[in-house]
Image 1 (cartoon, helix red, strand yellow):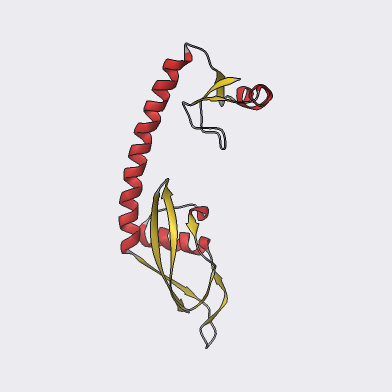
Image 2 (cartoon, helix red, strand yellow):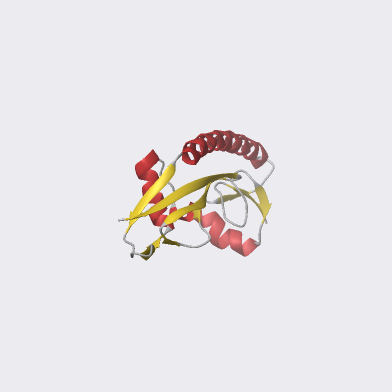
Length: 148
């Protein structure tokens, strides 16, 4: 069954796309939730305008993400944590800690799932992490962990 997506559906498509899905999925989920419309010849023009609007929003979001990346990459986030005399932390520095430090330092608020670390930081010192700001736009976070 061909449907026009009215919103982004993970694993199916993005807003304005006309996609082929199983009839049961469309009937039981997409149509009742308002995420899609049954596709016809008259919905083709609507799909074109939805895609045009989506592309304009994506361009603006990408531009904003590029600006955020320059601000983030200029900062070094300093996080104070309790540590032993040898420099080993009592606990670890997680993605949530990096999000809080970034919000405090720059005012940029990210979801903790947008931050990617090889592993949680468990020692005093310097490290890096990456932040996914937009599709294809990633920033490198410089992190300095100091003993409290």
